[in-house]
Length: 126
Image (tube, rainbow, N blue to C red):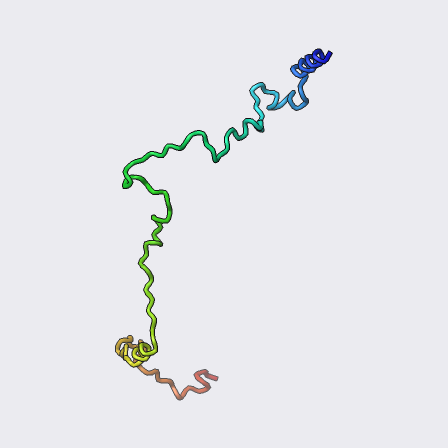
């Protein structure tokens, strides 16, 4: 009796479809669900890969280095030089005359402006 019920259920499964399988993309015989089964999801652990990676070897001069830090130009700068001034050095620099008045350019205006003293009312006519 139990086997007859099982076979009846299996034949009904083949012929009767769920409502969402009647039309749409699911009704296509080539449709494959996007959700994977638990046995298909992760066949092996990422830490235990069955095959080792094959790394090609060549002359070290011809292999391009993908690391960033040897190609970073900011790291190739010469070191910054710092000078520590003591009090005696500062006093010596203050005593030295480092510039002359001839080092500066002459001003453009070399003539004096003469104002009219006879202007009545500050230059405005009444």
